[in-house]
Amino acid sequence: MTRHMRQITRRGFVTAAGAITALTVAGGAAAAVPRRSGPHDFRGMWLATVANRDWPSRPGLSAQAQRSELLAHLDTAVARRLNAVVLQVRPTADALWPSPYEPWSQYLTGVQGRSPGWDPLGTAVTEAHKRGLQLHAWFNPYRVANHPDLSRLSPRHPARRNPEWVVPYGGRLYYNPGLPQVRAFVQDAMLDAVRHYAIDAVHWDDYFYPYPVAGEVFDDDAAYARYGAGFPTRAAWRRNNIDRLVAETAERIKQINGQVRFGISPFGVWRNAATDPRGSATRAGVQTYDDLYADTRKWVRQRWIDYVVPQLYWHIGMAAADYAKLVPWWDAVVEGTGVQLYVGEALYKAGDPAQPDAWQDPAELSRHLTLAHSYANVRGHCFFAAQEVGTDRIGAMARVVADHYPTRIRAPY
Image 1 (cartoon, rainbow, N blue to C red):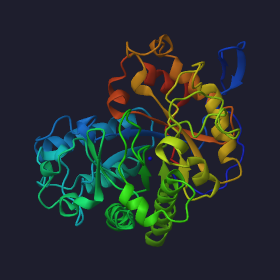
Image 2: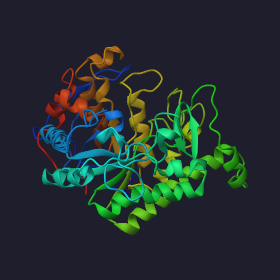
Image 3: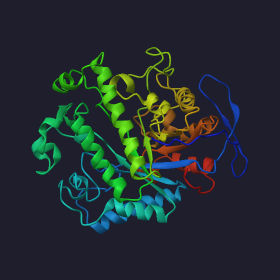
């Protein structure tokens, strides 16, 4: 999931009606908070293809059916007054365009490497732009497969031709971030889309080194022995591997097309304050710096990325990770950097009976936007994900639109 280096300034908090909304934050009294609709705020939705999460609805549909479903998602974005779609085009070391580097995605035809008979990414870019939507191409750098069996991959898959690049972990396969040849290859594979399509941004999500799995070790011993000299710890070496991926990709994007932005959507907690005084007032079980070896704060402060979309997938008042505490933390992180801050919103939780009571309230998500609007550096929101933007289980998205999106607006830049 990142990446925009434009200087930002405080703007007025206004809507078409100049409305004022009351906000109650856990532990505090209701307060009148001005609500704004900025002229160039980011209003995005993620459109996930991995495991056919959002699109296509199932593998093996005809090209016409796949195209119709894709256009329906774009039309839904327009109807919800959004201005950007973040389309997952490389979910598992594969491609939703005719890539010379990697096979066609199995989520299209059901068979990895089989052509779907059309160009989904090319169509998405053209049709999104026709509708006044930005199209951000979403890539996952290192995930190879959601299973542990190399033999199930397409015979010409780079992972099968280079099995020494691959680490099995947690029942899945990953490229090893510690190998320089892997870092170069995944950049080449992703940047092919930048060279050949008029995408508006390269977008990464929260997966770098994999999330920890209890009782398992990510086996990069050989790579660390060969390339880890000079680092005080393996953790420092791993963070450097990811830092280099981010910095190198940023530079190469700008060399290819200076108009294409680079954005990342990390897990919402960099480090807890108990671990690092610079961290957030949270008690999260995962910290990106320590567990995913992703120094997300550094990427912002170094201005390697143009925008950041932290996944703040918790409700206001949650004890371990309070939305109301994380928004100001991220606001302070981007202050003075020119990196744009968009907040990742957990629309998928709204109305899910497995979620806490706060998520059964259709107004919870709207309260998030109201709170975020009181911070000068928050320049938009992105909703996970397209399926819920359309179905809107309890009307939470409709409430956001009614309260905050009175008209359609252009996306930033």
